[in-house]
Image 1: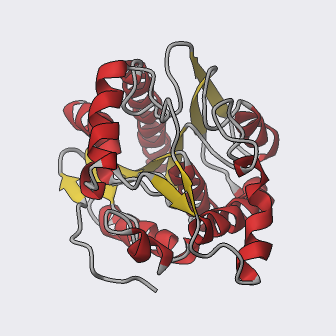
Image 2: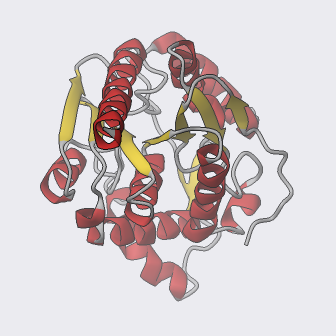
Amino acid sequence: MSSGAVKSLDFLWPAGRSGVLLIHGLTGTPTEMRFVARGLHEAGFTVRAVQLAGHCGSAADLVATGWRDWYRSVDAAATELRRQVDHLFVAGLSMGALLALKLAIDRPDEVDGVGLYGTTFRYDGWAIPRIAKLSFMLPLACGLGIGRERVFMETFPYGIKNERIRSWIVGSMLSGDSKAAGLPGNPWPSLAEFVQLSRHVRSNLASVRAPCLVVHSTDDDIASLSNVAVVEAHVSAPVEKVLLDDSYHMVSVDQQRDVLIARSVRFFERIAASAVVASEIGAV
């Protein structure tokens, strides 16, 4: 269920007949996808950024929702965007990448390509506290009523290598402006929901038939490269991998976001062009 208490920060920028649905991460906001949205839109893509249920408000708003609510936000936005475009692409950051994969699993005949940015099946990066790496135990703990009021607080470097951007985002986050920068911590119940989403998506990865673009930092402080290996090993589709050497986890806003944008534009354009050629050949 969704609290319905938070004003939506969704946005839709119409352009061409190829559309990209952008999905932010856990405790995040559509703002973290805005650089990517602008770059895709300037390249001629119609762009839709979705705000996940329970996000951009208080921790209580978030805890009142679960991963199925978050996915329903994605599913509804995809339905809306699909009515306006001929080619549908979906891209997500961190947990948003899992929701993008979930959409590709559920809509194999509609999703033409997937962008996976800082894909996170497990929080296992070098900046994650040891206790947080035990988050796989949270569904059991929260199911027993343990830790429902507890929060894993974000820690330095907050997924961002660029000091200027980090200063702005962390300042907004710690000031309580969750609409601009998300929440400063992950409530245990929400992390438990994330773990369940991760297990669900991972067990169904073989159903992903759409080509995947994986963009990940080699120095990701939140999610190690083992998360990329999961995608490469299990999806039933070609995987194009781009490893960044001067960014941390938040690749959509960090120092090499222009590389991410350029490779995403090239990847989606190539798929759309191939689909057009295939359609013309089929019509002959």
